[in-house]
Length: 196
Image (tube, rainbow, N blue to C red; front, top):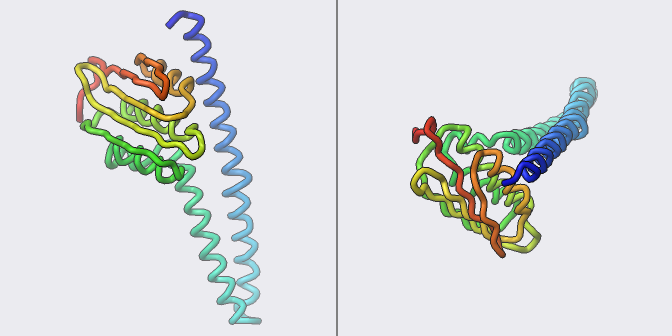
């Protein structure tokens, strides 16, 4: 990768990071914050209805329970987009499968690797998650991950944004081969990276 390519890749990663932060802020402010304000107002109305109209109060409790469940689901979705808990708990295969399922994407995930330090797993995960997020509608994605020699080899096949994946692999110190229907990436394990 030339110096100009490297600078362009870093600029795209920075722009994407800023865009993601703005998206998180919007999700918190316009979504979750507004839902919690609505729940607060409903709680005030519920307090008034408890004495005046017990049947209406029961209906309000049901509505509040639904609102809290919805807010919790959105909070979990937002947390998964920042760093998926399943990645830490169960590893790359389960995390990528869950991400594809949550996105409603048809994906075949074939991961046969052990566990690695969090930084390496995150680098590989976000490469796959980027492909999942940018997958063209009504298409399928194949994700294959193996350890070969001193690198994790990630094969992604489908109609997705290869530039984003290439940038993420480059940021992790890896290399990418772009093909007709996807990419093959090698992300080095590195001397300080040992299976855990």
